[in-house]
Length: 173
Image (cartoon, rainbow, N blue to C red; front, side, top):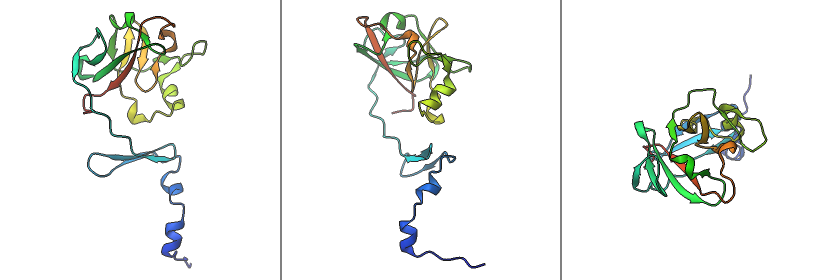
């Protein structure tokens, strides 16, 4: 057998991304400092460094806009009042954060069927390493999922005082 050796020009000009970024290759590789290069769904990317987390305002449940610490080391949540697309403030007072248990259903839009979180994460292209956040519940009703947002059944109606949430793990400093 004879193998044709490629010149440096051919190697540089080749499409190495098809080998490294094939859709069946998901992974991560450490790079400079604490950054990580990640492959997901055939694309290479380096997550943007998170902005500094504001000082903690208090412990969940929130009473106003701010950064609220969750119980049991589940992270913290930045809460901001918005005019649409949020969760009603009235539900936040009696809400609780819980880790995923499996079997949870989430609805993207009103009138569409609820689907398993795994399928919702996959269709929203949320990588596996970003799916570990706790879920916000009010009694047995799922309100909000990190990476997906509010469940359509829990979204506030227009004119209702509502909040947008942004969950971060405790180590996101």
